[in-house]
Image 1 (cartoon, helix red, strand yellow):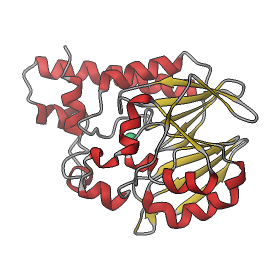
Image 2: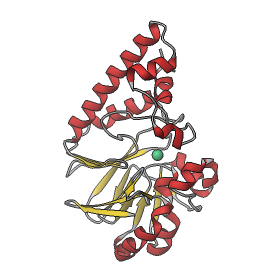
Image 3: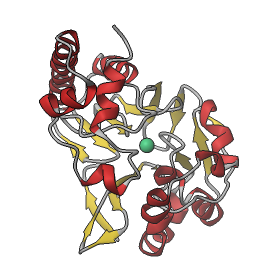
Length: 269
Ligand SMILES: [Zn+2]
């Protein structure tokens, strides 16, 4: 299933597997200038690839914000179709050539599929498109190889899975609360008008949204640590701060959980 939205210079493709007429766990892929940012999950290929076929002469680069299966799934097919060069942070290169190293769980295979191997290059600090020059920032936390792509003239930034909305819903065990916070602080130094998030789509008033999220994280961290200091166990802290676990934990073999958020916060004093 695919939805398309057009913004000034950006085409926004919302991709994912359809469940009961809606996309559960959407992933956004963006086309700007001659660059496709993230190639989406394999499970969207039937609807997504014909749309890319129409744009194939204008795509010279595929940039992956990080090496997760829902962002690299159509790399190979789109590269064959367009002849585009694939760029990713050096820490993500090995996963592109051997995606099985992601060790996908059944829910990931169902929602996004296992990507075929593709070959990429280490992304330089800037990528020059036909129209814009993009700055690349290393923003680890959601994954070690995570990058954001910033276009300063229009104040827009593509944030992959770094931002993910105003609040933290849940974490996988690999999500690192403190590294995410640090990366958000890093991008908030930039002048950001709009965020193009891999999960939420376009978010207006970028700096305000990031500042709100950072304030939320600060408060959450203080509250969680105060509860731990008072002697509450992890499960009670989850309920007191983020509420009960929901269907996501059950659906994802326990991978996406609120408990993981609390554990990450408590990993540092
Ligand atoms: Zn991800």
